[in-house]
Length: 275
Ligand code: C2E
Ligand code: CA
Ligand code: CA
Ligand code: CA
Image (cartoon, rainbow, N blue to C red; front, side, top):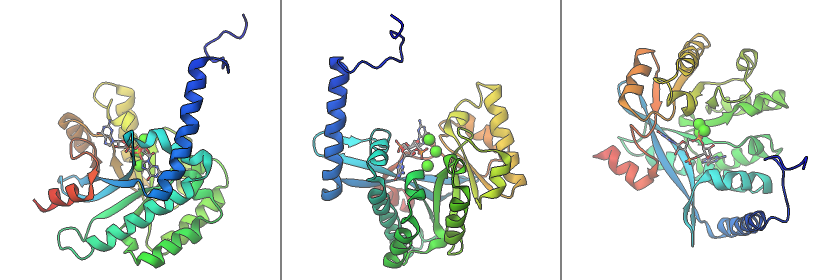
């Protein structure tokens, strides 16, 4: 039959029905998770070219009562499609800001920056600025140590609105990093239009830097591009020393990846910093 290609969706397929049910179930669980605070932040170190830890990226984890730790790849899309991302995203930001305040009193931790992922849906929401400013007022966090990670999809629509919001936050000291750089829709012209501070080279390029000449060329030109636009550059997903030394040879400034540390709970991160 004409419609038997692999993209065909059959609604009466029992496997599909089971998947749908699981999906509905997960969504109901997400509402409970919000009410019962089943969220937790993990912290992954970011290092400079000396290997010194200068900051962390916070990564959201869902401690599901039966399923254990659920990874964000599974639930972020659901949070986005249900609009719950606005509430969860606010919680993440507030918790990260409280951590900045706590660390600001500690001699070994007071200079760390914290990077927080912002979903494009959350960023585009009409109440985004108000919610963020409320968090800033409640926590009194040192905003010059906060970075927001946004993605290239912000370039797609309402670019002026995105720029205005970024400028309003930058005026308070907040910095912006462009996450997953190279996988989306950016053009050089867009890059100059948004007030960014950092480019984050996507891990898919970083992990193939020694195997693929094309990926090496992408990483190398991203580093040069960042330099010429006076942006910081950080490579994510660095797993091996060979990758690190290739990046060092090509003047990459900052690094993040399992080689330097996996995402861990605050306590474990602090213990590592103070060891
Ligand atoms: P991302 O922002 O690109 O985060 C990097 C992901 O790569 C994280 O996965 C991290 O654990 C993983 N990673 C870090 N170093 C390495 C490495 O060396 N090798 C490999 N293979 N992976 C590495 P995670 O924590 O599962 O998060 C997945 C995605 O979920 C994130 O991708 C981000 O897009 C989203 N996410 C996580 N937390 C939040 C959040 O609080 N808010 C929003 N909106 N999205 C979030
Ligand atoms: Ca990120
Ligand atoms: Ca990323
Ligand atoms: Ca990614």
